[in-house]
Length: 191
Length: 191
DNA sequence: ATCTATTCTGAACCACAGTTCACCTTGATG
DNA sequence: CATCAAGGTGAACTGTGGTTCAGAATAGAT
Image (tube, rainbow over all chains, first blue to last red; front, side, top):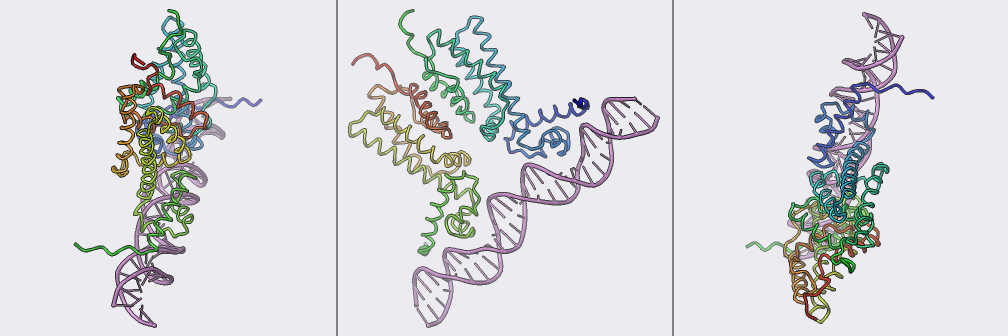
């Protein structure tokens, strides 16, 4: 097998700069920022963008992927905490709250993700988040304060419909409105 | 005051054709259909579009307005039924269901509305829908099976975040998930 | 039937955003 | 230090889609 030569140092550096700049620009001005602007923000020429990402879609996909990875981390951290003793149901709603909050900052990223539709998004990291959330749900159900028929898909559904573009008050209200559908107000019987 | 001459008969006819065609095209191919395509579908030249709607935004706005009017009608009909004896809470959730359902067909229209942002949309008809929904809510609260702190804004919030682009199963699930946040599972005390 | 203001037509215009490419720069290898 | 391929540059290209406008057509009034 021909061992592909290692990439040049500055190439790596640039790739990182581009990804960062793209993220910032997209969160700041929406997924419709021109490639020119992203390039400028990265201190690089347009051509360089295309060297690293053959098409704009690819670039956006990369940014979204980074975002998903962050979410996965968050979910796993929450799961960790549950193992440590906190209420799974609380962690789950808190997690949902944080994600909504965060993607309010990056609402544009979410829009971008939507635009990409059901497209790529590395399944490995996505499943990482999914697995953590699933575990969270199971734990909560075991405790008896999450509805038995709640699934990961429900969380995806809620996440994808979160009112990211609304002011904080509305986002909180939304969370309040949505939580009762997940949690069980009255525990089974005992306790 | 100079009495503006009545519009020509064919102009009226065309306006209607355009509005219809625009609605169809937008629901079919999203708000990004070209003006050319709309024109073609209406059996009219592009120029005619611009005679009636100075800009594409105006045209889309008009389509959205029509849609909002339909929703208002629906809400008012529901309110009527309540006066006739049905449960307000049921009518409200059914209404929400229908709207989600309908805007699943016209998901593109909703997207268009979103794109227009907080822009125009004739306030008169919008308030018409709002008033009806408000009445519905009040009635339900009087019955004691809608949470006391639910407002019209909540309905707007839910409507605007409805997963219109999802398959029917997901939409139903969403409705189930969201309903508990509006209704009161356990009536105050009596009964 | 004639006439004119209104409306229609559609080729052409324009601005913008993604993309390409011929040429220059530079990091790494020997 | 010399060499050269990987990488970078940015002006120019391209395609798309909204918008315009001069001339043709026509509804409606006289």
